Picture: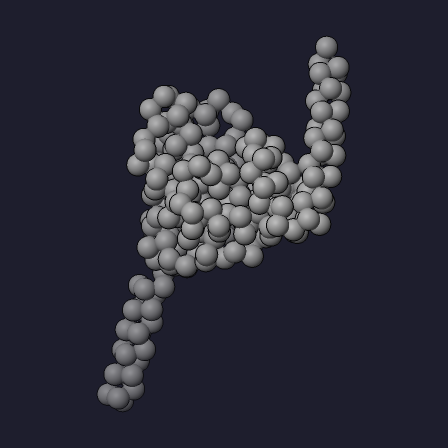
Length: 253
């Protein structure tokens, strides 16, 4: 009888210990699941409003407080950057704060899991946003610009073939092109070749936004077929964009 009671006490103690350790993770997982649809829609390039993103951010903050693992922190950084990019006056007012918090969240994720290309890419985006805000105020810090080089190279090295991240890394590379080390420029050039093969339309859009046609064409000169395909895509999509803008202006009159 004594041994049975002792076994029962041991079982209860072990169960309590497991609940104590796993409980916060279970609660964090439930909280993450509540806003997973918002994140899925964002990653699917769907339109998501300010309120839904803000609610998802609050959920990720709560989850990260319960279980500060890399997933909640990385997703929090992604959501903060998405909100910062939103064309909404409320989001624009919060951009400096969002950039700083996104940097902190993605940095925390990388401390826990330093080989995440996704987190490295979001961390570099946060640095780029901070630099852009500083430039808009006429106070760009050389240290912030220089700090992009290492994270951008890590974002590429840890996952060079991840298709969903390639256009973003190319865009950041072109944005900072003349401030990057030769090593990181070579990595970005490799991403440009990958983008030219995987998604020339996305590469054309990034090149146009960064006004970097000369730089991209100079890189693609090494492969004539890719250069010709990219050039056709670039000018074709440019004409489509111009046509759509013209239609938009006519409808607005």
